[in-house]
Amino acid sequence: MSLNHLQIWHKCLVDIKKNVDERSFNTWFKPIKSIRLSKKILTIQVPNKFFYEWLEEKYVDLLGKVLYQQLGQGAGLQYQIVVDDHKDIEGNYKKNIEKKLKENPYIKLFDEEFNNELNKGYTFDNFVEGPSNQLARNAALSISKNPGKSSFNPLIIHGGVGLGKTHMINALGNDIKKSNPNARIIYTNTERFTTQIIQALRDNSIYDFINSFQLVDIFIIDDIQFLEGRKKTQEIFFNIFNYLHQRDKQVVITSDVSPKDLKGIQERLISRFKWGLVAELQKPNLETRIKILESKAQRDRLKLTPDVLNFIGYHVKGSIRDLEGVLVSLSAHSTLNNRKIDLKLTSEVVDTFSHNMSKELSIANIQQIVSDFFNISIDHIIGKTRKRNIVVARQLGMYFAKKMTELSLKEIGKQFGNRDHTTVMHSIKTINDLIDTDSLFKDTFNRLEHKLEHSLIKSY
Ligand code: ADP
Ligand code: MG
Image (cartoon, rainbow, N blue to C red; front, side, top):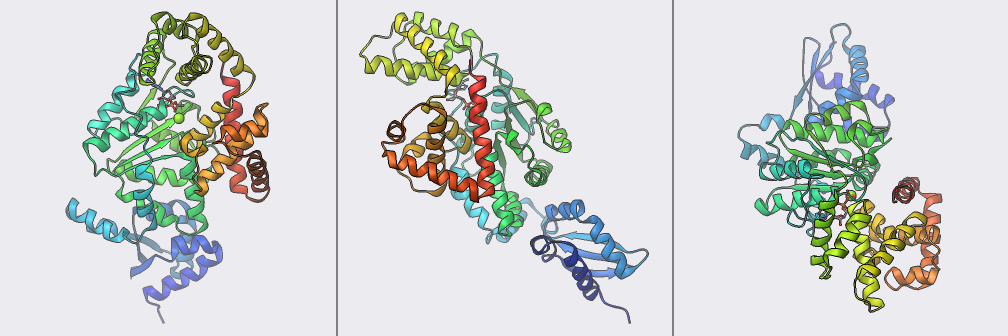
């Protein structure tokens, strides 16, 4: 008695189930429909191209084996992809996907959270141009006029800490949003992206997560170096990347090292990066440093003489973040001690600034680094919000302030939004508990710690 295709597929599923864990089975095999069997070729229907690529990549051997067991010599598999069936006209296509994705929880999340993640304060207008950033800036501007259609896809911006990567990609996102308010932009950082994937894998919604990218027009992701060693996240990123790239959707990536120096990242991913443009943000030269200082001083309504501007420009040669740091101290010193900003005060400030940097991180540095790391504003970190992710960032900030500075609990509390020293103690305890009990958290913790220590070595 010969079995029909449904029975065959059912038997295959029974075998597959013995070979994969339950989660993978539910995610990758349950949604498959058997369509027909003809001359030992079984046609199965998968929900989309991702799915197909994923199966081909991860399960091709298993599928081959179980099919062979049922059908013997000559067994074959053919895929039918659902979404691609609706490719009539672009409009219809989109509508169909939209209908399909209506139930997808991530779409809502993207709309609510990711779309609003862009920092509106970072624009091209307040990004000072210079030889150190010209290539990246021009590429970003041209993408903004024509997302996905330029040859700069993906655009990879790399450069050291504090040289303007995050500023630039936000400017790009904001600019696109301005000329095309309906563009669906996903702006995220690698930390967040990874956490999301881990969670999606945990609660079996990875397929929804990946699928939600079907509606995305522009995908901007900051600090890709954090993909280091994360195989699963890299795989999923690779799939999403291919999917978007094939459809002329724009991908923008930043990294703190050049793609070829990215460690622990799969070669095939790195070679994809070469399809687009790799642009470096370098340290600004003297002239640009002075222009940046002028622009920041004007923004902060600080009146600085050319002498003072030149002095800072000459002596502070690190990142733009450092230039900003000096301006902040300068303004604080002049206000607190009621002193005029002259060359004398400036040289004192630059001196202490360089000195401090070499010894220990200031609490402001720590807050800044935590803020960058989680992509949460400092205002939120020291503010009153009780949102879970912000609370954790805040607690980590306090934890590292205690660990990495000489400040007292009382002083740390004060600088974290006037909190009590017992709050700081509580935070430290919470972090220690989390490290012990939550491996995902431990991982994040390690990377943040690495980042903080790294910044200590790098500055001056
Ligand atoms: P990165 O992401 O490379 O570490 P950021 O984008 O966070 O660096 O930049 C650090 C700070 O320097 C930000 O406040 C940013 O606004 C400022 N900055 C960087 N480049 C420029 C520039 N060309 N003009 C004006 N400000 C800049
Ligand atoms: Mg950054």
